[in-house]
Image 1 (cartoon, helix red, strand yellow):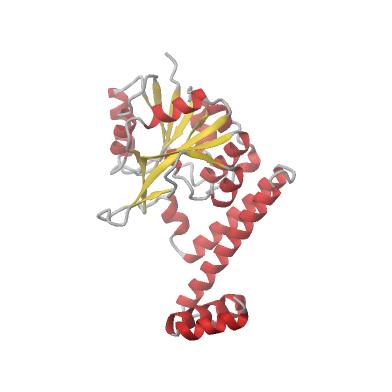
Image 2: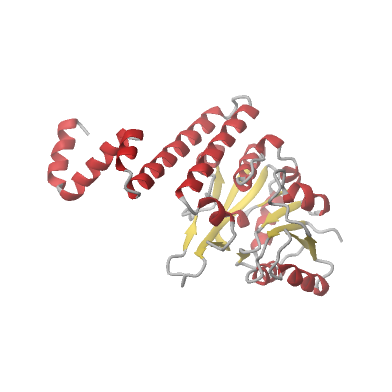
Length: 320
């Protein structure tokens, strides 16, 4: 019997995490068959041995694709398009990296039930728990904060999509996932572009149940590799801004207002972060020269903190 869902998992040197991910997939309680396809990008820590062990135990469900040469280091790498999609058989695709996991055994059933009943919906997401690797969990939080079931608009996806949902909350139609245009593929922002495209192909529906866990700060993870220093974060922001401009051009202005708002927000956040990073590095003259308005704002904020009464008078005089 053909699987209705393909769980797509990308892993690299996740020996300490991959069993938890696979066990969470296998624990799903569904009234339909599913398959688990794992792309191992030439791990060197024994991850591939664990995948082979699970394949032997669950040969009809677990399908590892084990590389002998690392693909991520290649400029044209894209594991989903090149390696996983050709062998995935499901009508729907669910996503989860090897260091994350599902936390609710009814996750897939709930999401697929909604997609089956609503053909105008392209993707179903849900709340997830954000956990920082190596911590006791006291700083964990659920995201998004939204506690009601609803659709998220295309505008919300454009403006807030980067980090709005955990990637392992995605279950979407396979034909949408397979047909993401080349213009949307930007190295390092695959989940955002996938969400953007899905939101332009149908409704994006959100379930408020917490059904997965994102494990942040794992060595070698995307976050560590791309967001661990101010320079890397600023570079990543610029990549996303360029991606939004490309998507805007692809649609010929159909979503220009949404893209422009998203770009303006991303530029503002990038510049705020850059100013703060320079200030903390004691490069205050450079920070003030590049961002004079932020320097003024910083002075106002400090005035409000130290002399709230005087700051209030200043604001009234200025008509704020």
